[in-house]
Image (cartoon, rainbow, N blue to C red; front, side, top):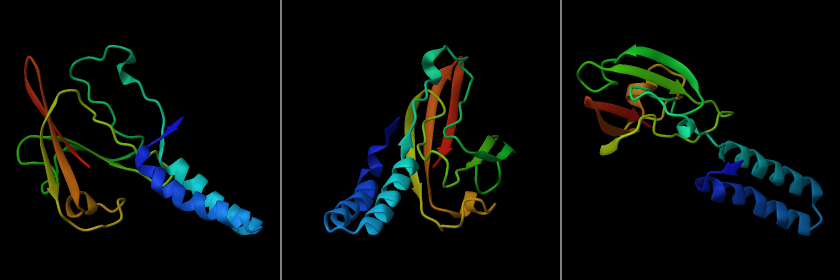
Length: 151
């Protein structure tokens, strides 16, 4: 299993003091810092996921992350863009893989940053109050289809 490269600085932040502590003979400190580096490495793990190994139907939207589904249904006012939308909201715990993938094939047509708060992700209001990026993906399968991914 590989790690996401964005996690390397965090893993190094735990590994470097562990090496220094080990060089100075401080085994307990070295073990503590090494444990932090291992935990951060696990947090930034990036397992192989190959949904494209088999042909998928054109209308399939795959899960962008390994997470708990918190809401699935009609687009919530203030969360989904205006119009007729289906919405799926997911929560990633600290133990989940924090690599997000695009759930839908197509062309990215827009990326919008929305400033906001930093509420705990398991709170219902976090979906529309927290800061996020909105990524619009468009593809044509008979007719034009648009998916907006909030990240």
